[in-house]
Amino acid sequence: MADLTDLEHAVLGVVWRDGPCTPYAIRRHFLASPSPSWSGSAGAIYPAVRRLEQQNFLSSSRTKGDRRGARCYTLTAAGRAALRAWLIPPLPPAAMAAQPDPIRTRLFFLNVLASTERRRFFSEVERGLVERLALERASWEAARREDDAIETLAARGALLQTRARLAWLREARNELG
Amino acid sequence: MADLTDLEHAVLGVVWRDGPCTPYAIRRHFLASPSPSWSGSAGAIYPAVRRLEQQNFLSSSRTKGDRRGARCYTLTAAGRAALRAWLIPPLPPAAMAAQPDPIRTRLFFLNVLASTERRRFFSEVERGLVERLALERASWEAARREDDAIETLAARGALLQTRARLAWLREARNELG
DNA sequence: GGCCGCATGTAACACGTTACATGATTGG
DNA sequence: CCAATCATGTAACGTGTTACATGCGGCC
Image (tube, rainbow over all chains, first blue to last red; front, side, top):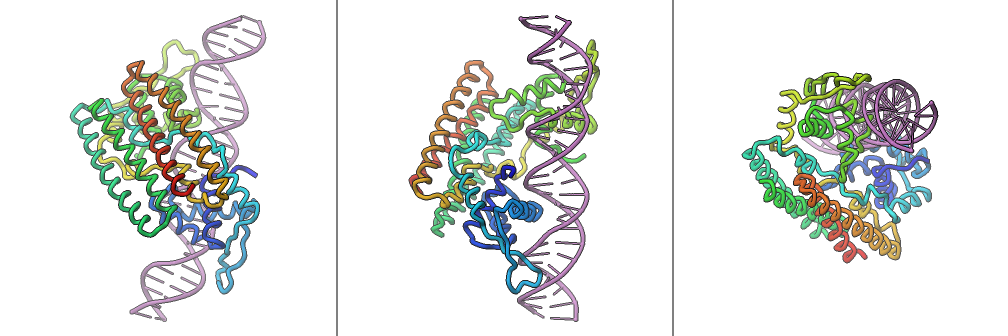
């Protein structure tokens, strides 16, 4: 009855959305995600699915006509309840708090670099973020064209995050540059 | 000669900044951080410090007059080089990419909730983020008053991130609400 | 029939977390 | 002087990662 991780909850969510499905179908969802929180590695998904079945959040039946005995997973009532509980506020404080940012982490120690190098740091990272921004804008617009409301919003979230990081980086450059 | 983690690099950074110091002094830095990427748990710091010493990025000497034989750690030339290499572009792609966001992750599955519950989700999460924003603005201003340029910028980064999340959440509410 | 990609796993590993153990120091 | 806190670790654990192994199916 241990608490589920976000990955496990997301697996429940995928099974909820894509109906009864095989572990690989779940994997593909993570593998295809344009803003991935997880790699979707087999070593994460298959064990997660098994844990969820053991805790009765998923139930499985053999896929008919599959010699390998591949299993098809369905969300149980308990699984649905767990998924809902994950979504219903209050969210855990860690979910609300500012998330770690590798660039911010680095900034703490930027003074190890000489001022020339620091300037280079700012311009290179800025360049990288601008590039990212373009990619994210593209995948946002792609999702929009496909009328996928959820995917559009997710992409939009990533886009706004990157935009904020870029704005922040520029402030930092003006401050320290 | 394995690649160092971000935590290990940050440890090098702390030793660089705070001069020769004990593991506990390093720990305190992480424990006190207002926007923590790591808990600063002993079980993370002490092993990291040992690994860094074994790889010759840190060197230690006994603290004089300490009966426990507590060790004082100094950055070696190799350690300084590793720290610089971590900071000098190009940064790894994962550092530039959009970072995971637990709220965004949840949004993917928001349709499990009925529309009343969805509205409640948006208003509660919005309330939470507004609260966070106030906290972060406060700690930003505190850092500013103390004239700590780096801490100010870090706090500013967290602030802008939360602001972006909030703006995004409101867009999402208008879209799905 | 042979090859290649799909699908289903498993194994070893790394790293950070919580919880625990223990000695030193300090405050009341 | 006793308790609480500081300081230094260690142990067990969970979870996700990469890399590997293997069997099936379709294609040429």
